[in-house]
Amino acid sequence: MATLDLDRAWDLHPQVSVRPEPFGALLYHFGTRKLSFLKDRRLLAVVQALATAPTARAACLAAGV
Image 1 (spheres, rainbow, N blue to C red):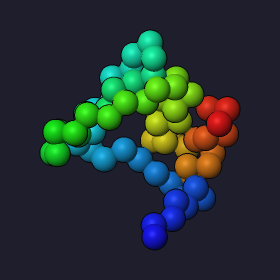
Image 2 (cartoon, rainbow, N blue to C red):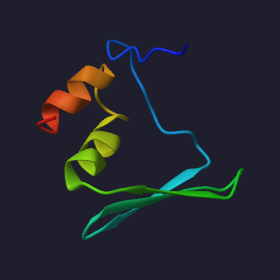
Image 3 (cartoon, rainbow, N blue to C red):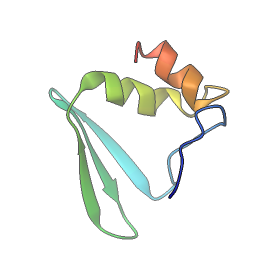
Image 4 (tube, one colour):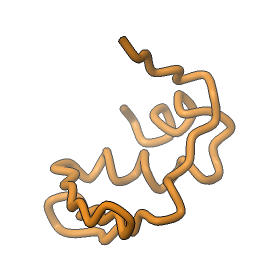
């Protein structure tokens, strides 16, 4: 079973594109052609903070999650 380590830095895969939407966001992976949905704007804020946050936990806290 995989575990999530929130105390490490995370970032989006370079082949993933994020398109903000009123309901949250659409994420598209150009390699797998998979489309995913974020159904909450707070999750979008977490994803956007990942690139600059020192840890995933910090990105969550900054987004109020």
